[in-house]
Length: 299
Image (cartoon, rainbow, N blue to C red; front, side, top):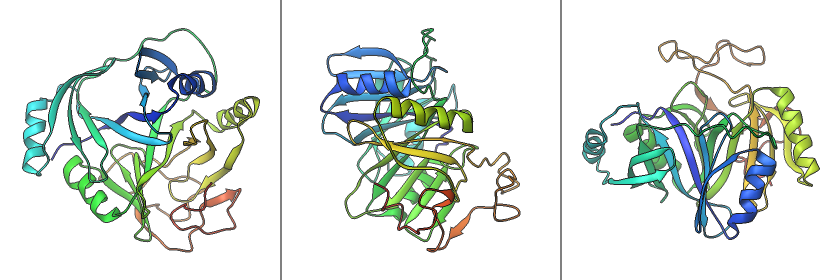
């Protein structure tokens, strides 16, 4: 078993790379750090790579990368994966910041790139768009949630933060409440990607930035109950559902087993648990009066 420390970047396919580069640089506020004819890489201003783009259909995730401890021996990591029945291939030049990685396929068919060492992207000195801190999490619809969760926990050392019934799982690999989400759907597909901003004021600025680009919110602002992050959602020009969030629950100490106490928690302390089917999706905000089935009603 290997131990993932953080989410790296997500690779999305698109029929129009130039248009998506414009969205991610001008609206989201990422920096284009490398571009070839059929691939582009974008990083947050803090230096963390966030998005890679390659040709393909709209609104699809083809790859996802995760970092293990810096300095880790990828050969040992490959052997650990092999003991779990996972065949990994060693590849180089994954991205501008990732020289080497182990690549394998997860149960939902997505290529996973595991890397140990990372070179931060340089600050280009520009300011534009929303400028999030990092890519915070990726959510995916899967036809077997239990199988996918077991793989991510048993093979990659993720921990379950919460369940909503047995159809929606929230998994963490560090202090953040969730880094990946898996929700049941008969047709596997990307659910959403999420960027973290520094505070509630930045959520408001993000909403206004989207409005200036004639992009309307499809959900929010509101405070989720599971994870308790304040969030807004929109769909970009490829129909990818994109979330901006802040104030997500943090588990500062795994030994304590509860999330950092917050005034809006319903439980004292707030521990990982299974939330019932009547759990509202928002504590307050748009749509808080309705219950959902694995967030399926979000357009």
